Length: 72
Image (cartoon, rainbow, N blue to C red; front, side, top):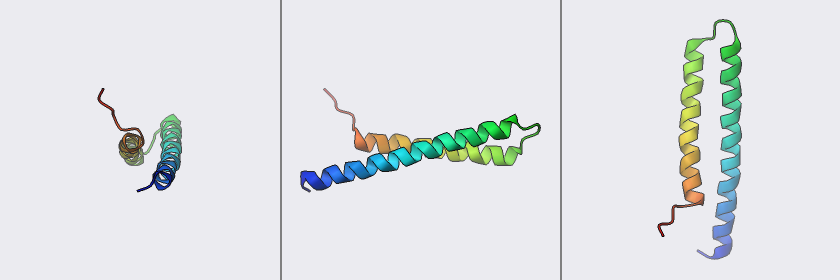
């Protein structure tokens, strides 16, 4: 793989990461709004929190692909 295609791949990963982080923030906003209602739908709240957690795991894995740990 040449450096140009590798750089393009990293750029694509960075865009995916930005999209995932925005989705994570949107879920956080939705969870907060649902909680602020008088009696939130607990099933919906639980599903949103699970989705947010799964998304966070994907974000961490993607960040590791972009910037792998370097043991010095």
